[in-house]
Image (tube, rainbow, N blue to C red; front, side, top):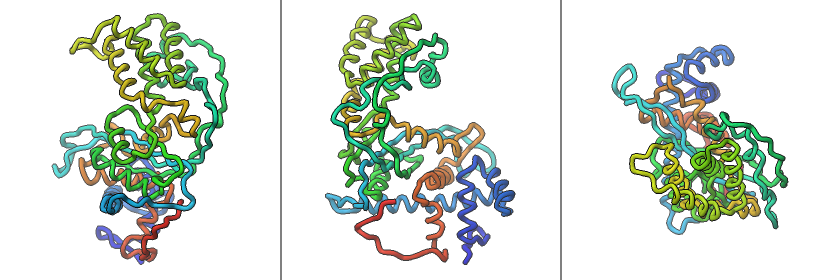
Length: 401
């Protein structure tokens, strides 16, 4: 059986090939070339665009239906249970960027502008608890000058001291078993319920251990408090590290002093002594005085004031020794990687997406492709008219995948 789409008939198998290719490569033109050479399928980039918008719109509708079904449950909601139940359910959220244009304005690019995309990762993990901190010393990746050059601005200009590798159990980190993801252009008020619905569908609220990771942005923690209140909130350790290095540069002038101060502060935060760092930064900030309203971003007074505000606002989410003992992750490297995978398809100075349906559609196709539940192909096979479509009743006991 073939499905009629835009005047063209495609089997579900061929349609899946088209959509997987469209979501995997960097452009519709590239997708057309790959399908021609590898798939022996002649199809224009315009038609691939049309099909992506169509299927992406359906995925968006399916996501919204799942969210509405979750929100419409009577309170208190009954948690979805899966077998086996996740040992550790980890939710991470971060933002990316894509360039959009005003839709419906005819050929060409109209009112181009950058918009933030929101991406959430849902990671089923295997972990273990520890009676003592399994890695009390700052990991070498944060104490090694060369490794940090790509993360800390200005570090490449300084000298490169040699530090001995820190001691500790390198096997304490949780192991990822399975992931799914969501992405959207919508605001956090809408994205939070979508995240909760996806997490519930995976049995995350009934998991033995639960963690929610993000950076210091306020909207991340608004989502956590409203929709993931039973999850342990954790600030990605990388973000305070970046701010601590900037604060060290604001206080010291010599390269060796900057690096030494940074490593000291980073170690103290890693070991849970955030209050000591706050007190020391407050002393330096008081000595320099408050920043004027028109202070430049590099003004030492502004740098210290912003670092202090960040640490004070997030101190309750920076108990890293306890998280390690409980077998929880302390960095959001997984979502950072996922955002890069999303950006690979949608971000580029030469890429312009309609500020609406087509922009949302490509995010849905890409997110479905990056999810490890095969949801893109399953959706295509389950569309009305597909020979694979089956009617089924929802069970109260889901099966983990």
